[in-house]
Amino acid sequence: MRRRLAAGNWKMNGTAAALTELKALAGAFPSASVDVLICPPATLLHRAAEVAGDTGITVGGQDCHAATSGAHTGDISADMLADAGASAVILGHSERRTDHAEQNEDVRAKARAAMDAGLTTIICVGESLEQREAANTLDIIGGQMSGSIPDQSTGENLIVAYEPIWAIGTGKVPTLDEIGEVHDFIRSRLERRFGEGVGRSVRLLYGGSVKPSNAADIFGVSNVDGALVGGASLKAQDFSGIIDALERV
Ligand code: PGA
Image (cartoon, rainbow, N blue to C red):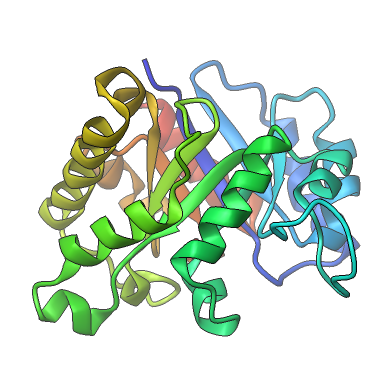
């Protein structure tokens, strides 16, 4: 059985005041059936880990460097994230791929470092609108998966997030059939590469304009094990609505 997961990606949002939202969320816990992860900016990670304490909420980073240490001004290693209290890291988000020209092989190197540091690694894949309109979605996702996901992946250290670029922060969401098609494809690719046991144990998240109002429908789609949530994870009330929907699946 794959445990369902609601993961919040705060992106470059939040100073210390934002921790009140995490406190409010922590007040509503524990959840017996759903894992909850918050990925705040790196500056808040340590304090967020303290606020989360033993509530069952875990915290994670939004990126890491592929090296464990060294002359890389401004970068943060996977070991440093773990040291600050992270148990997970998001890698290969489309905003990283666009803003920092990250390629699949960069994501794979970072993922190896994260897994070596004991972090659960959420690897993001997703197509642009042009790619979808050209009917290239599955080719793009397949290429991103084989390029970005390391061989050492298991059901414990890997999570794959399907995030269509055109759905992120836009309020646009693919149809349930479109989400199902991609998630089934990701599942079959994982089974083919890692074998049925591992392939079936990797959790698959959908991300892109998930809100309390559309969460229940999305969570009803096959092979959707939870969500990676941006905007709606910034307010405890919104994120709780998504967690509630996931608990009711
Ligand atoms: P969104 O972002 O929920 O604000 O669309 C999702 C993401 O980028 O992970």
